[in-house]
Length: 225
Image 1 (cartoon, rainbow, N blue to C red):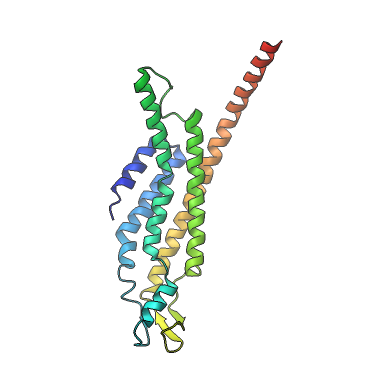
Image 2: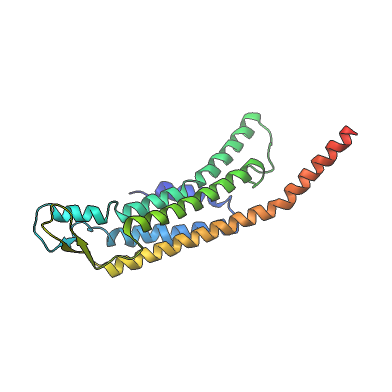
C-alpha cells in the first residue's frame, strides 16, 4: 500500500496547525506510520499461514482463524491511520476555498487564507473532534473484536467442522502483543494531544469572541437608542 498521499496530506496541514498539532503530526509520522510500514506489516505478514491447530480436519483451522480474527489486525490499523488522518483534509479544502475566492475576486479577502479565524476556526475544531472520535471508536472496536489488547498463546476452538475442542496456536504472540500495546499507547497519546489542542483553541478564542459579541450588542443598543 502507498502512503504517499497520506504523507502529503498531513504535510500540507502542518503549516496551519498549532504547536500541539505539529506534535500530533510528528507522533503520527514517526510512532505510527513509520512503525506500521517498517515493522508491523512484517510481524503480521503470514498470520494465516502460521496459525496452527492440533487437528487435521479440513476447514477446521480456517473456521477457527476467521472466528478469532474476523478482520486482519494489520488492515484494521491501516484503516485507523487513514480515518484519523483524513479529517485534516477539511482544513486543506477550507484553505483552498479561501484562496480560490481571493483569486476570483482578485483582491485580499482575508488577513491570510491559512489564519485560524472565522469559519476556518470552526473547521479545525470539527476536524479535531472527528479525529478524536475515530480514535476512541477504533480502540473500542479493537478491544471488542479481539477480546482485549493481548495476543494469547493458546486458543480453544470447538466450531464446526472441528471434531471436538481443539487447541490453536498463534505465532510470536509476545512480539505481537508488544506491537499492539505500543500502537494503543500512541493512539492514546494522539487523543490527549487532540484534547489539549482543542482546549487551547477554545480557551484562546473565548475572550476574543466574547469581546466581539459585546461590541455587537453595544453597537446594536446605540442604533436602537
